[in-house]
Image (cartoon, rainbow, N blue to C red; front, side, top):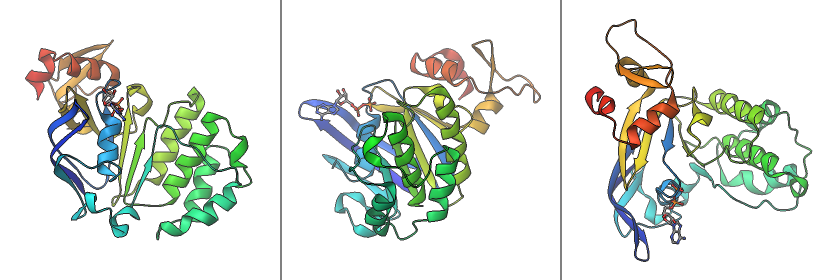
Length: 256
Ligand code: ADP
């Protein structure tokens, strides 16, 4: 679906990626986890063609993203961490922007708005930060693109809205789509993602499906151990896993 090949990128003298190669498959929701400043946003910008790599490339469905072809851009959507919306109604916004996305679905838009208890008559000018995020996530899902990139989408959402967020995203997922959610608030994507990817010190240091993780690791009271028998299946404690991965704990090395 989308992959990066030997990406090298930096801001002036500050190198963010040296040689990053990573592949994302269709039908999965990825949690791109990493501490602040590790390069999660930069990776999403490189994947969406907003930034160009110094060397290496991003291939999306066989197209090189540095060419920014309309046929590639109409099939992906990026929700940045911060954005402004114009002072118009949601209806007017949809009328002006839906045309860029050939698979746009009014039905999905309405379903997602309902999931967040919002309606079409909103005026985008008067929204709180949290509501603005929710509306834009709804629009993003309604574009119905093959690839959806979301950068820290739960920032600014209160606890009930974070739970609505997980339900809304899960309800829009299909086998032909890839959703990549970057976050440093790892608990926000617990029970939503299919694959956990950890970015640390310029590298993807962990990249495994949740099914594989529960087969190999057991989580109890904030502790991680190796699975010893087939019926030792526990729910992933994503925070404990993340901490163990970035601090290079032995249990992770032994299990994978
Ligand atoms: P994350 O999304 O994981 O918090 P970013 O991709 O935003 O990380 O940033 C990666 C690194 O690049 C950080 O050290 C950050 O300070 C730096 N950086 C990000 N944007 C710029 C920029 N426009 N100019 C210079 N440095 C930047």
